[in-house]
Image 1 (cartoon, one colour):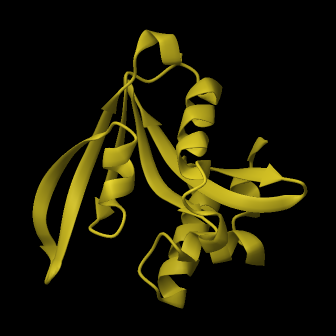
Image 2 (image 1 turned 180 degrees about the vertical axis):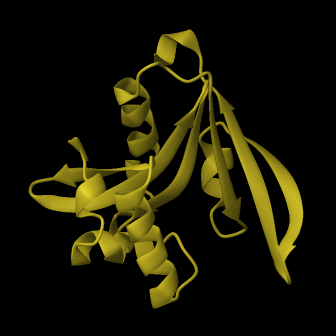
Length: 143
């Protein structure tokens, strides 16, 4: 079940999930958690049998849904939860976006590619770290 957890972003289990989607540094996790509690960004979690399995943080700008953070517990990766988070979010967000956009690194780019996103290299945004822009055009049948 997808639920809005924006105001609980500082809770330990949510911070743990956020830590999988940011530079592995406590300050980066603090900044990510605080950004949800102080701005327009929203954070949703996917819960199954009382366990929080994944989170998706996002902004909606005009006709775009911009994924800021997407993370699934390591032991539950490869089971469709990441894709499910995106699809369920598309059902929740009003008005419906025309496209979904994410920026990611080499570690996660194949996930986005495998679920239908078009992938474009942004080059080395940080020294030695290639970044990618991933874009998914939402079809009317998915709305």
